Amino acid sequence: MAQQTFSGVPGDFTAGQVLTAADMDKLREFLLYLIKDGDEGDTGETSPLILDLGSDIVDIVGDVTITGDHDLTIGTTNTQILAAAAGSAAANAVTYSFFGDEDTGMYRAGANEIRWATGGADRLTLNALGNMGLGTVTPHAFGGALFEINDAGIASLFITDGTAEFQTNVTAAATYCGTRSAHDFSIISSDIVRMVVRAAGAVHVNGAFSKGSGSFDIAHPTKGGDWRLRHSFIEGPQADLIYRGTVTLAGGTVAIDLDEASNMTDGTWEALCRDPWSMVASSGNAVEWSLSGKTLTITGPADAVCNWMVIAERQDDHMKGDDCPLCDDDGHFVTEYEREGDPFGPIEGAAA
Image (cartoon, rainbow, N blue to C red; front, side, top):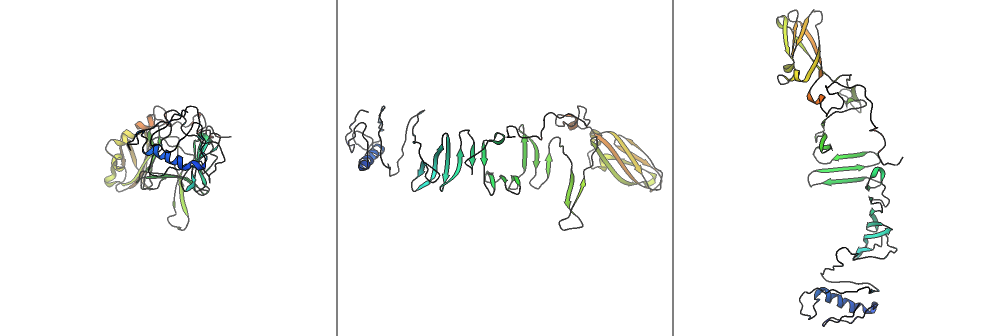
């Protein structure tokens, strides 16, 4: 480095000079000159000063403190602008910290590994594999995971826009995922909403839904206490719909409109159903019935009370479309199939 002299620059320096504690005042004045003035004529105008060290190195032994409200800019584009030597840095003595708060900041924990600490404790780790761990210094890549949250009490992730609140957490008792505010919770695939849990609790599935078994499960309506009541779903080899009711044969005959009886718009029943089957019964009476389209006609003794039921197979567009993999192209339910792969098997990339 060629020696340069500037008028008004405090102190004289030579190439390769090693500064010691005795030179701190001289160095401090020189740095303040570069930051505040940097002008050869010492006019007080701002004029950037570039000090070209070439291949030489200036060693500073001791601390360097820049006081006042000034910026310090180091380096240029695509260069290693600031490098700290490998040493014995730890969470309670980080490499890059803050004045008066030496145990908060960032340090190099080992080859290709960076950690962030607060209050002398490791909080965040980025390892050589690119895995990041919050609350752990050994984040793993289970199932291809790149980010791990670890806490012995509640490991949790909370996201909010100031109004809607989403949280997922893990405790020793259970795993939770959903909204903490009064908002719907949606599950999406291929950028399409597949399932929605409404804020009030109702669940809606867009598409086919398969299960191993199912039931309703409610608080027992009469026993009270901790007792529950449940019934199994009614299942079968067809996607059947059931319509039923009770009617009195005023004048010995009655015509039942299945749309009207089911509180549906006219024409809905026939669009929805095919291959219907009907049954009518009246205790102690002989009755006859016929089903034509959406109309069930019953004849028998006057004022006879009849119970009726119509069962039909669904035939709506959903049953015939791609949204229903449970059915064939004609909308008929497929009872037996050979599964490709194992959707309930281990996570890809997970350790055995």
